[in-house]
Amino acid sequence: MPEILVDVNASSNESYFTATDFLQCISLIKKQKYENNISVCVALPTLNEELTVEPILIKIKTLVTEGLIDELFVIDGGSSDNTVKICKQNNVTVYKNDDAITEFDGLRGKGIQLWKSVMLSKSDIICWCDTDIQEFSIKYILGLIAPMILNKDIKFTKAFYQRPLYKNGIRVADNGGGRVTELCARPLFNLLHPELANVIQPLSGEYAFKREVVEDLRFSNGFGVETILLVDFYRRYGMKGFAQVDMNERIHRNKSLQELTKTSFVICQVLMQVAGSCSSELPSTLNISKTRSNDQSKKIQNKFHTIDLKETILPSIMDLRLQKMENKVEIYFVRHGQTAWNVAKRFQGHAQSSLNDNGRSQALSLSNTLEENNLKFDHVYCSDLIRCIETCSILDSKLSFESVKYREELRERMFGSWEGKLHNELRIEDESLSNFSFSWSELADLAIPGAESFDDFNNRIMSVMNVIGNIPGKVLVVTSNGFLNAFYRITKSLPMSADLPHLVFGNSSCSKFTMEPNNINVHSWDINLG
Image (tube, helix red, strand yellow):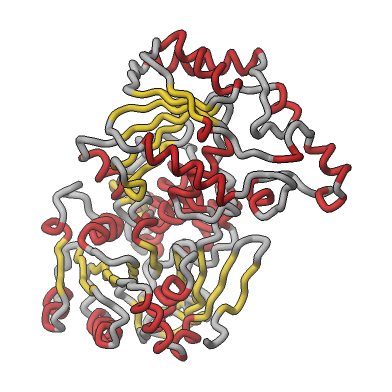
């Protein structure tokens, strides 16, 4: 196999590939694709692309002939030129945005086209590519799908490239393109999501996802779609399954400053919303400069006009599916209240520790919230550890459970000789741990004397969840932080070592997990309900 991975930074979980390297190993990619029974869809969003769409279709169809692509279709946003005609002349299926899927009828924009294309496709990998690219090459598709075919742990690939700037058809700068990225998106990412600062082209329109991942992400209807997909992926999956692919150079039509102002505005809307900086009711109107005249008085009078650019956040495909499902399992996971051992940073595991005053207050506050929301549970399960039993008892005093089933399988991971010890004690005892923060990702790869292995821990978790997730209805489960962290990673098919900085199950927090009965693959999480 050719050496195609040009750089992997293990400390930051970053992977980089070069697209042209995959051109040298097509036979290997095909072999892996067929051996692992992986299907691939390429969905192309179009809107008035008659000048560039045909050569793109011709090149991609060679990959269909090679057996590397199983589905190829166009989803058109309402072209008024010959785009649709050209696609049909090339025997490519065309879906029109308004006709394809009935949900959110009337919404316009690239994002709604991509969102609908997920439901229109059936493949394991979904790849999108903008259709205004000049001098198109199959590297744009091959470079995105190959890493996921060759590496099962990669879930999301995104292109980066040099973007030259053209004016009146003349190349005036090698790196003058990507103005929205450099002047709007990148500064905002650095402010609101500094963890994503190393994403080279956060707004690139060429990317691919594993189906089970993209069905779990929210979209927006317009040009903010790349922004919300990237942020949502990071929050749900971390960066270990993300890879960037070098496409060298991308030539396309450069937009006017007025067009870029609109694009920047919708990206600001989406980034602020997903960062929690504003409400779901986003400002949607923008004052934008009118075309200027040489007449100085006209420059001053009526200089601006207002346009509406509302960006709507679309639910994930999985959430939409579960909303429509009549019989589903709604599991409300509660982490036990705070203990003195939590405060001291002492390993608890299977050792017994009681709630402190703050922990009891936390549990009481949660019981009031659940009562105010009129939540009635068909079944209640609780770990048999004292800190969980005490939490459940406080909830029971308000909510009056019919019965509680105590299960040993709901316990925290057993930490062997570490149980009862402080973090600082362990750092002193073992010099190799002197710089440890004892984060989840650090513990996942560490051999702890006498501790329960992650394989055994995960098997224990799934044994009880196969029981709890069997019967439709509302279920309350009181357990521990480790159980919840491990189960989350299991549901997302993530390694236990996955670093998920935004995944925090606070003491006495309540997180909702919704699933199809007996099918953990159809699920959604709502972490730390308000």
